[in-house]
Each structure stands twice: as C-alpha cells, then as structure tokens.
Length: 79
Image (cartoon, rainbow, N blue to C red):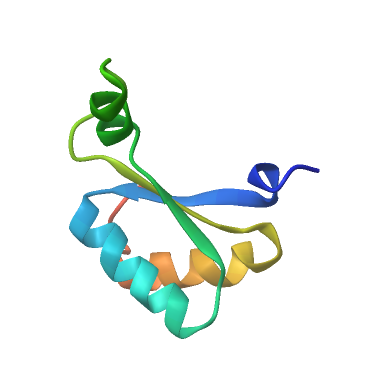
C-alpha cells in the first residue's frame, strides 16, 4: 500500500474549518494531510477543484478517532 493510500478523507470544507480540525487532530497526535486541489491547480497553471473547498485526510489507522473529532466539531457538515 502506498503512503497516499494509507490516508482516508475525513472532511471537506473551508480552509478555516480544515485548519481548525487539523489543529485538533495534531493535538491528539493523529497523522493528517490537507489537500487543496483548486490552489494546486492555480499554481500549476490550470483549473481544478472548487474554490474554498479543502480536503482533510487522516491516517487510516486513526480514521475512526479523526472522524469522531470531525463529527463532534462540525456535526451539521457533510463528510
């Protein structure tokens, strides 16, 4: 399994929300990654992703714990 496959998406939302969640995950020592397809596309010179939509991934082995934090923090947001 590649390192990228070892992460699962736990949240998609605004950059502010993702930064807040990332801080919470870091406090619990949950390995995580952020991906902003729109920003990456602009830097590469082509479009991609939706403006303002950032993806947060957690290591698969910590997925359930990370998802619980997301759901407790933003219970009304879709995953």
